[in-house]
Length: 499
Image 1 (cartoon, helix red, strand yellow):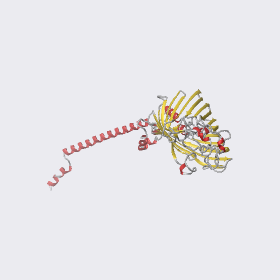
Image 2 (cartoon, rainbow, N blue to C red):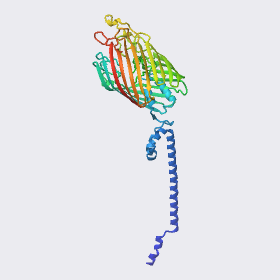
Image 3 (cartoon, one colour):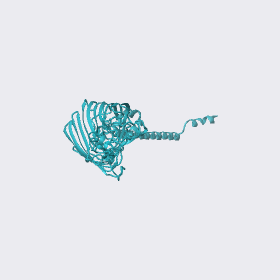
């Protein structure tokens, strides 16, 4: 027993060697913990520095969600990733620019100029700028002739309107524009359009063929006005011919309907000191609208044998006063087909046209004038059958002109605009059924910022002269559906929303 109890102290207390080893192990663990804490602190500081750099590169993105910095670091990282390699936001919205680029009544043939000036001002800093617009309308029409309504913001044939009075509530158009600015020199643009009221598809406005989405415009452009006044673009674009603008809040002018070309081609321009000069090589054949030259006796677009030239000068008289004058030439208009006239048919020869236009801005008043005329007669306005009484009317040149003004009450972005515009289309000699079609538009528009507008118009039209079969050829008795005595009254109410 004594021997047993004598062995207990040896089991209860470690010797000095074991104690030293234990202390050394504890010290090593503390050193490793210190290194880990230092590494974690370094990582934390590195993350804070990176977030600060990203915040400085894209302040608009981060500042929009300040709470996320403290409570949701993962969300902040996702938002901060919407920045290009050069520190610019990937996506942006500029409502003022969107209104300028998508408005179907203003800046018709100067989209590239609008974009170049916006980039010069630093307004398109994002890699991609998104633009959108939707227009809803309610309208009523009254005509003195059954199925003949001369209002051109929808196709004026009996496929669209019946009897002597019609009403509708509809979507006029939906647009989505995408502007790309990958570098300071290159700009790309495409625009998607849904417009059942003016679609060339078959059927009514509820037919599938007229409810399609199209790429209305698409082009690439090279130019930087901060470096050079010269620029160039290629693609599907408005041809620089005439003014084509309207002071009305919704309705395009007769001149636009008659002479606003849209085509494939390449354009070069010069813009400096109020001087604008543009030249465009246009693909021949029948283009999308307003341009046509024969190609080997066909309308196949396969030669660069059409062109347009435009020049204008803007003189700034005072801070809020300016005068702009311009002129244009188009080598091949759409007024080249023989009888019976059908859109996009081939022509025997080209029919050129010239245009003169101007704009005066004086404070809150804007006045415009636009004139265009072909240099040759339109062959299709001559009925070739000598036994047809309509053959008594000789072929005629095509003329169109617009004059209008509008005045702003209140501020630019939240004011009221009142407008009055008269425009006329002339296609035949005096007393011919297709002599002319004109319209007078009284407009009122209330702006609620650049993104929302309510508008109303009263339109009075005289004459009914559809371009297709304008002088006949579609009726069995050889007559024409054109009617110089037709009259229409139109009331339009609508809303335009955009971003």
